[in-house]
Image 1 (cartoon, rainbow, N blue to C red):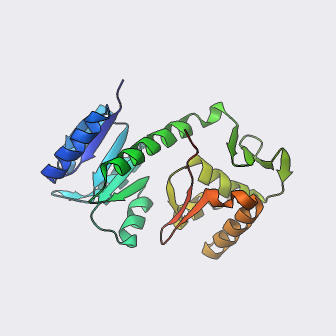
Image 2 (image 1 turned 180 degrees about the horizontal axis):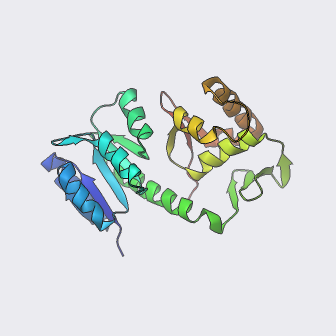
Length: 229
């Protein structure tokens, strides 16, 4: 069964072009030109939401927050004409998974959609496999251990929690604030922004030649690279 994409975009020409490209890839497209219609379309249980920022009856940030408050966790990709970092960060803080700046290339959009759906499915099925392999390393999720070529790598619990969050959100940009919220606090010392920088540096040091699996998205946060399909 084809996957359903909810496209919330009030620019008719852009929406029609995007809808055509998605349908050519086998997606079923639910198009809403405003938030009122988007709320109705949500009942169709889409597999991913493409969300414009500025809409006739509100903004995408509020809708994103509303969706997450309703415990709907399908991937959300913001479509924004504004490339300012503050807007990107704001969307991610409200629960979005990714963003793409208009005008966007169709191939890039399709790649982002596929990656986010794949990551979402991986998160749902993470309990079925307790080992995540990347480069020369393996992260044993259930045992909470990091190994390199079968040998244990000494890490603090906070470093391992940081690695786990990055892996569980493979391919997704996480802001520094999102990481701080996820790491705080399970009985350890308070984790602030400077402490996060220390944890990130130490984790990268421990990964050695595999440190580049953790990408810095300047002005936004961090992303763990997607493994090959």
